[in-house]
Length: 287
Image (tube, rainbow, N blue to C red):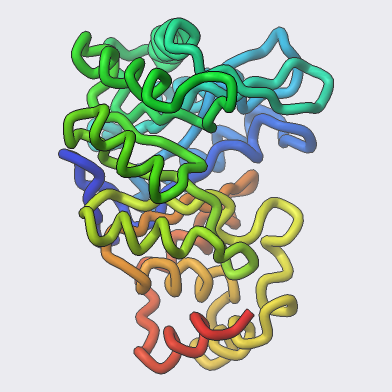
């Protein structure tokens, strides 16, 4: 698998999104760990998580602990694996999602994430979602302080606009390395942010790159051209969707979620799928 760059780190072109292994409908721990191990076997070196990937309020950081255990029990070398986690999004336990962008919360949350991951320094830490009650610069300022203190090695943001990307990079003194926004064949409204990241040389990490947990299986039927291109190449529509995203800019690193080894193995093969310029154009101009 070829590599792409996030800040100072080279990572696999396809990453693994950890959320499906820790929220509602999640598999048992054994299958989750088998899925992470399958991703590592396939050459994936970017694993995405967040402290909010859990169900009950008593299990904050469930996915971080799961990933840490999977890395500890893997039989191969994991020294080149970059674990990216996030803070500032909360799940109070009633099925809802809330936000807390206070600097004090983000600093405490990052240190707690580091403990759960079993590391002295988090490889990549991202502000999960803007908090309307806190000035954006103050929230991002917490990431700057975490960088300066050495709690995190690299800083990113998630669910951000073009203006917020520029503001965050300014607050961080040019040290913003990633933007994690929703982007998929179904959800394309972050194309402007993707292009802006490409201009700046900042990694763009699409979350739910196949349209989300419920929509991932219907990429080919919901988006006819993706199914047609998949049939022409003899691959899955999901591989076509990921290969299309990779073809949009050299800064794109999709992180498809998975809860089964077979799913992440299929997604990883997208890195080897070469689409023609005409196919990329067809996929880009159809909904």
